[in-house]
Length: 227
Image (cartoon, rainbow, N blue to C red; front, top):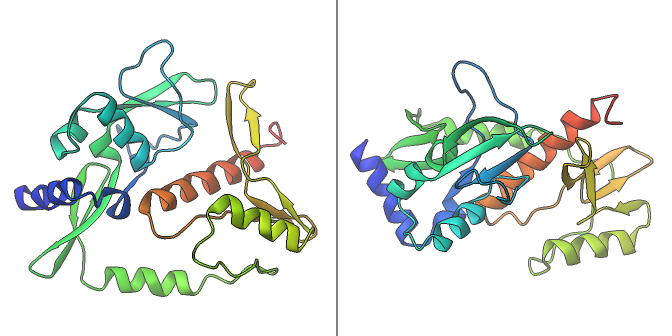
């Protein structure tokens, strides 16, 4: 475990955290899963800012405001409070508990998830890639990305090119008695009832944001009360 955490420290020190580390709510706490609607990173103060998503950038900003270094030790001492839709605390964990990270020692892959290290079979990544490749494409494709546009610019271009795609980027939807808010989706094709979530794929923090955004939208859409 010492070597694994040293690898993680090296990536943090080299500035590779945004690319190699994703943050997710720990899968299990005290034997049961927790579904948070928002988070507070750091001390649970009265006016502490809420964030609807866990991203590496949010943790990094909190650490830098405290004039601390980005290290495994700091991650283990940074508390993250999990809140429900009414901003009531469900529980807490450390930033380290939320890290999703992959490294290897002597060609053997290891994965950090929910604060524990797992030794993965060498074919794990290839199996995941094959599974993802089998996911069908959306019925109405968006414009090809030029590799330059940011998410906001790209979303607007898609909407302007085909008005069948409704533009919801940066449009907040309130819920939980107007105590919490989030982006429902980036684009929506109303006729096919297809939601589109757009993220630049070069950063793992963007991917964790994507997963959290999709999860929140799906869970709330399934609620008759919310609809």
